[in-house]
Image (tube, rainbow, N blue to C red; front, top):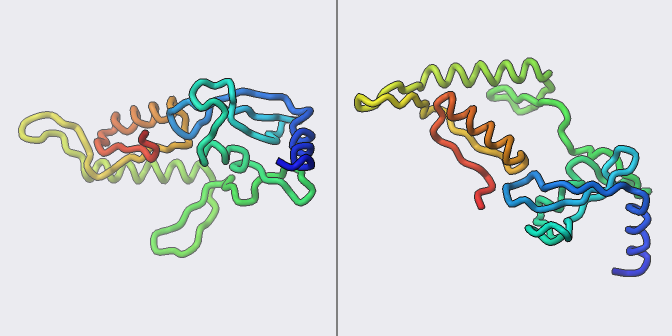
Length: 170
């Protein structure tokens, strides 16, 4: 690394507080060091003391900082303008997204899940109680923690979903 670039990197994190955490993308448990200054994450990097990743990060883990922030032309962190911060809804057949509030969005999702579950629910199969719905599938998220994905799976199974998968199978 050129000397100027190295000096700039040292200044950026020099006064920041180091906070160790675990990457949220998959279940491997890679360690990440977040540099926090005035309540703003200014940098993230792999934790060399973590026995799982020994400081290395995959492409998803490396992008932690840029999910929320990017640097402006003066090198200051600003909120990422591409980050979605409000629920967006696209009506069937529409070609545009519209903002909705969380109350409407969660209510609509619950209504649609209930309607589909009721329409496709199978109580028995071949005389055996199965209590399942083949009309809904569930895809876990690599951005959620293991604990969140565990709860999502419990919810999915409790309403009879049997088609479960995850986008970060390892």
